[in-house]
Length: 82
Image (cartoon, rainbow, N blue to C red):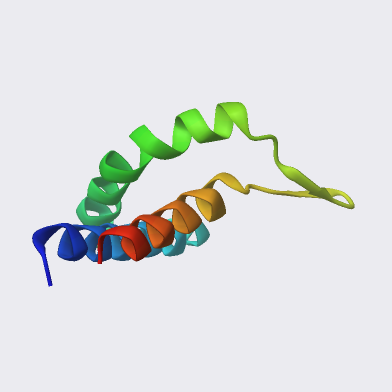
């Protein structure tokens, strides 16, 4: 595997940790630095997507589709380069 494939896979894992961290209301102190690092790595890409892509309304709730778009983009990049 090339370095690009490894980087894309590693970033997909970081995005997965970011998603899990979003579900945890108050992370344990030991996981705080890990969750903070994932935010610093994912937010620069997700925040511009959130500004451009409106959330999908599901009744009284809203689904943030920017993470889904990011994951699809990473999978497409992986299909092209790997």
